[in-house]
Length: 102
Image (cartoon, rainbow, N blue to C red; front, side):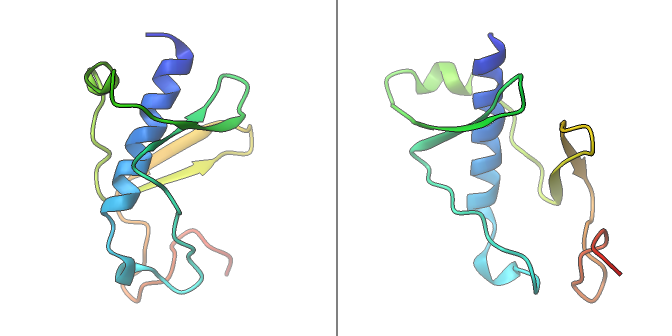
């Protein structure tokens, strides 16, 4: 699988996970992602992001090797510009973001 195909699959998984989140679970200050099931979201080797209109003629190929994103997964860009993910709780018991300012 090419790097481009791999990144499209990865971001498509992000889209699926975000769509599965209930809207009422948003924390104060958090903005929901606006994702569409017929779009692919790519993060390429140079760190650029792209959106792609998805088709259904090769959906089985797209899903082959794809993995579901676990609930309680946080995605972020590090200081080096690299995309990271961290599984596990990212909210305090009172609903505040653990890694926010203050």
